[in-house]
Length: 80
Image 1: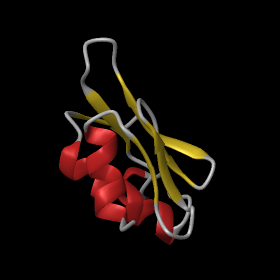
Image 2 (image 1 turned 90 degrees about the horizontal axis):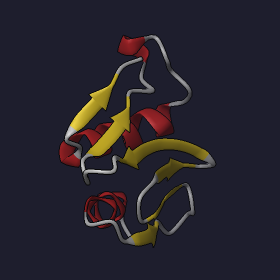
Image 3 (image 1 turned 90 degrees about the vertical axis):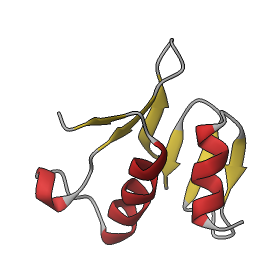
């Protein structure tokens, strides 16, 4: 499964995993490798955690790409 598809599954609270296993969703949460990069609020809103260099929370290039895709479907971007 492609990364964009995994993110779209997360947006619908469904579990998914990309072909490499580096991006996955268990339904309510989105993971880059083993790091949670997104979660679902009690009201159903999707929140992506901004682990990117511009936000000063860079982890890896791949995780930044995963976060970028998550931002496309998230309701909220958490920059803290």
